[in-house]
Image (tube, rainbow, N blue to C red; front, side, top):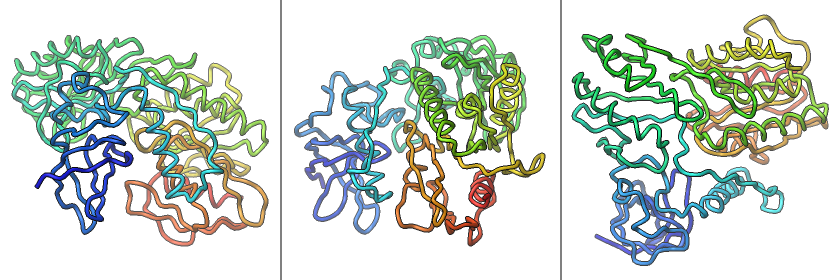
Length: 441
């Protein structure tokens, strides 16, 4: 049955929070101040979810309906979280998400939350995109909460260069009779070259033929079956220039997705690393989830001896290549790539790492910073985190555990002179690195 609700605020993931008969309603696409007609469906004892049937009265953050991307207007495309939000509203809405997370999860009083600087981005920002080919002619993003593919002929988040090349890619996929698959793309700074990786759940009889068919519409192609390389044509990596720093990045690797914020993000990390270096906290640092070394670069420039932790094979290979290239520049800090936690390769470095730089483990979030005192020592761990989820957990007050988003694992530990982790944890480079970091004295 259709009901009318008023959205109070947005929550991570893009839904608007409303209330109905004492239950929370998460409305896909709802924005603060919207009065909406929705059809709720149960998702727990006190939680409902709903899609918008109609807008009774728009709130101050909603764009006119005619300005909204036509593919996103009815939920056919799920490529962005807030397609109906005015671009000037993105800053206030995202700032409130961060403040709410620190307030509710971190138990940080509003008075202690520093000013949040929002760096706006133009539309058409994506440097990397993950598209879906349905095997029948449609190439684009999946619909919201759907397995249907929205054929991408216009879009506000991908680049004009990618949109211009998609017709030829679509034609090549159809001509080669390619079955359903995922297409991961990576572009150069100005939209060229364009690399692609086709990912299939099961083997194809002629992967080389598929790679050959797509090489041309794409400047480089890789074909993967269940994560294993089956065929390739052309380049698989490219060079990106960010705020004067060179990075090798492969189409399979993680890298920041917003082309317009790369320079600002790296400069922010540089400033944070310089501040930590001037404070004389330590000469050792960890970059967790290092990827190709985006944040590692800032630490090396500031003079830190850095363990960059990355277990993904492709990202790790780019990280190793970038570290080797940067050595020739004479950066003041030294870095090493760690695939299984610090101390597993080349022995343990002398001195204690006091600087922990955590790369984004989830989407979103600019650099944030928290400092956590170690009991009884008067020293500090300086936590430089670009992930909202990481800040949420490490900012928690009065807790003796760290709980990490998207895992079912908690890391109970005691902050003491020995910095002891008191119980078991899931084995992974991240958890091993965090344990080693907390245990070092």
